[in-house]
Length: 219
Ligand SMILES: Nc1nc2c(ncn2[C@@H]2O[C@H](COP(=O)(O)OP(=O)(O)O)[C@@H](O)[C@H]2O)c(=O)[nH]1
Ligand SMILES: [Mg+2]
Image 1 (cartoon, helix red, strand yellow):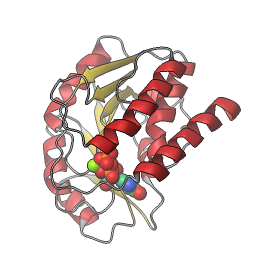
Image 2 (cartoon, protein in one colour; image 1 turned 180 degrees about the vertical axis):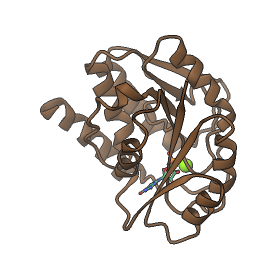
Image 3 (tube, helix red, strand yellow; image 1 turned 120 degrees about the vertical axis):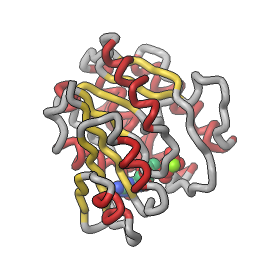
């Protein structure tokens, strides 16, 4: 089974090199998509063995992922991880196992492991979107915002993913559900350390809801 990882990166020079090296232990290819980082993220990712796609200016996580996906749809499974080391590459096999159980899309959930350490304000926006996505997808999705997931390459190629910035995670689930893909969730650990988040709690939650509604209305 050939596995690729796509990592969107925006100014993550502190973590990207280590992350790419670790990830390469579990996958055949790592594609890092850097759009407009002003630090050494791209050079460090390249030094660690990743194929780096550099987009000239910042266009957001969703576009970065879409560009990365174009390069890896011929892989059996595509894994996505965040570039700030909040996800542990050692848990990639857990996602692959979930795919091997017959799922097409597998989401690493931060809420199934019991040791919840997410900051309070983030938990609130997650609860709202989790409720909406679970209702619309017709199955319980505890962590629709999670960027740590795996999807079969042939299924990924069928998705349009019409959403921007952090809304891509939610729209991927809705589109997968509409197309009848099998969706699973597995527990993952998330490390909340000193890293900054680029998510704006109010603006990004509103944007997520906008793209969910847009998907429902326009497909
Ligand atoms: N290429 C790219 N990556 C981004 C952008 N915004 C966020 N990311 C990456 O997406 C991942 C998750 O972003 P982050 O702000 O940490 O989200 P959070 O962990 O959910 O708060 C990190 O690896 C970021 O570097 C962007 O505009 N472009
Ligand atoms: Mg983060």
